[in-house]
Image 1 (tube, rainbow, N blue to C red):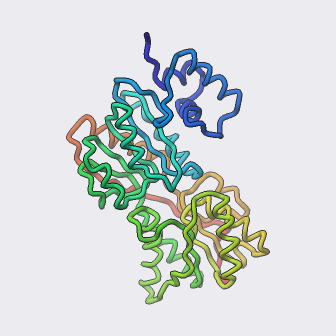
Image 2 (cartoon, helix red, strand yellow):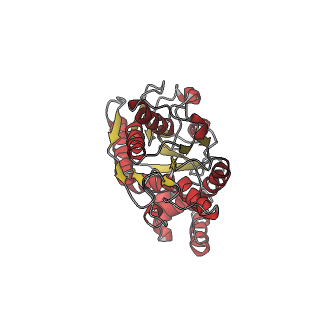
Image 3 (cartoon, helix red, strand yellow):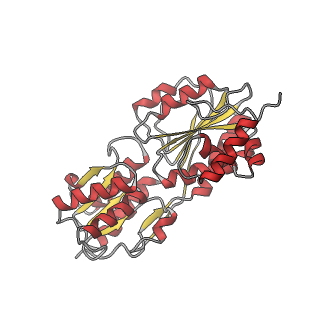
Length: 336
């Protein structure tokens, strides 16, 4: 009996590999007609989707992709770009979308138990003590969007932008415009991930001018439009003195802009807002969002090339930093 891969299912369904992956992961962003067609092909071909790995369990080697953050459109776009370029490496892709508060390393271990995994790409991961769970995996481990230089894993490599430098750039811009009471919405500021580096970069800007940053203006926030909205509502009611917001994700920034509007605060007249990632929506918000754009296609391309090289040659760990672009748009102005 022929064993079908996810690429076969995509070809027979007349859709992309990304769309098949979305169906297998029960993602909501697939229209019902397409979903029924893909599910019909899956049934006809006896393609077995595993409830844990959302992939095909079979004897041939696969590439594991773990996406930590279901509600983050930047990570979704990046994972789709990775899938679209994965043809450069022979084999099927097994994808797993998890919540940003779930454990991507335990997910990776489950993948290796259910499939013959030859390499894993982590999308939107967090480098902290949990990473020790995968220290014994004898396969290449690629981290995208976060530097894995500090990870105690022998075969870890990474592709990211210089988050600390971009955080510093944002801090310098805010200070140059007279902002001193700056709020920050992000995740754990002391973790060893890209978000902590953005926060540290912002602090670098304050330190360089002999200023002390008010850490009480920091709020932990999940990365979704709804979370950004709710966090901004609560924060700006409590801190009307804040003149700027640095949201470490564009999704959070978009939600915050809506909340500020509902509070009767003008952006940027009363509060300037800066995001991070450069999602498509940032160009169409009112006002247009000032943000740092991460090069999605190049991050995906470099991640696949790095994994391919580690599979084919000596798996030497490398940590690549790609240039990001700062887009100064309508949501940023001098402090009132």
